[in-house]
Length: 75
Image (cartoon, one colour):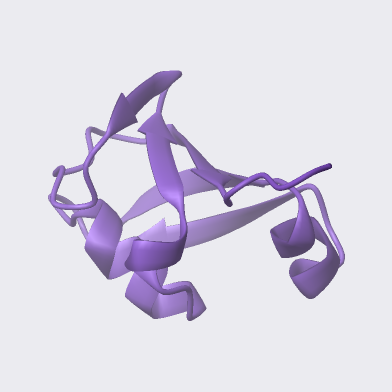
């Protein structure tokens, strides 16, 4: 198992009542596995691993930092 830090922004921060969470996931899991594990629809967020925007199909390296970026709206 690997421990990953998940950074949460916007409404996700409110949903989890935190700016980040730590999760344990199997070695060689994908971002999609992480999103399913924490109950977030991958179509609703952009994902970054260690600061680089990547698709949810990306396999995760050993412990990494994952950022979940919801869409931004404004006016």
